[in-house]
Image (cartoon, rainbow, N blue to C red):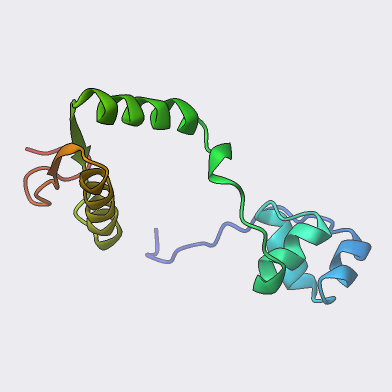
Length: 125
């Protein structure tokens, strides 16, 4: 091996000309969106133009309804609720929000944010 890396390019795809025209006509943009699963013009336009974005209802998240019911039952029954956070910024923020909201709702809440050095993702020795 010479130490050079070889790019492995994806197989070419054919993008519908109507789709390409609907999102502005640039073939590279059309191909990129199509490869990312945005192959309907309305979805691609909403992705490209934030004013067209319609967020999905959180109730469409798999398992949300039973999770809400379980947390509500824990609050109602005075059970201790444990939050396992994450050490990155969004994990710490989410942990803070959950703990604050559940305590405001009257919950007895404990939390843990793992130590990155000793409890990180993957194998730890």
